[in-house]
Image (cartoon, rainbow, N blue to C red; front, side, top):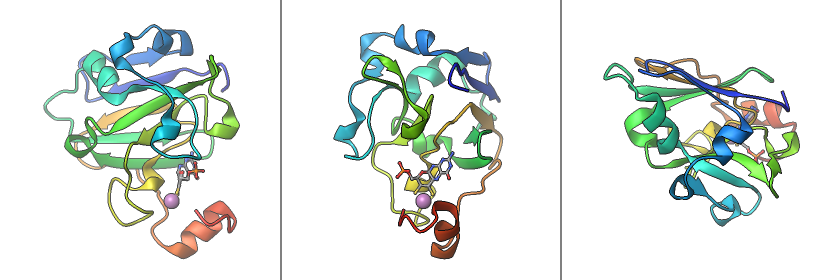
Length: 160
Ligand SMILES: Nc1nc2c(c(=O)[nH]1)N[C@H]1C(S)=C(S)[C@@H](COP(=O)(O)O)O[C@H]1N2
Ligand SMILES: [Mo]
């Protein structure tokens, strides 16, 4: 997983597999430095979701962005129109691949998420260890916690 690749597939014209080196080679205008600006506990640099979508080219049938973490079987599916322009794929910290303890090698990050389970674009959709971003026709797999109790179970009482 630490030598990971990220896949973008589903309802797209051009499925992608992206490595650390591929993402690092994106244009400066597609890079977002230092995501701690958006949330103090989250670290690293990323590329815009938009930059990935421009390469994969969603088909008209794509209405949701479905994020998969195979590592811990965590999934979130959010409306494509709402998430476009609002998210970053974090892949680098201090010039190296994003460590697992920071949610790496790839972490999805909504710049200004709603509090947990208050909106489709909530903090819970900030999927760590994301290895596949699937464009789907309608809502896809989503097992985000829906209640405080479920959060408690998922995070072992850490309070997030
Ligand atoms: N892979 C994965 N991503 C995940 C989760 C998870 O359990 N597994 N929890 C989600 C939830 S419910 C929240 S609130 C945030 C917490 O992010 P943090 O650990 O950076 O605070 O990560 C989200 N991303
Ligand atoms: Mo959450």
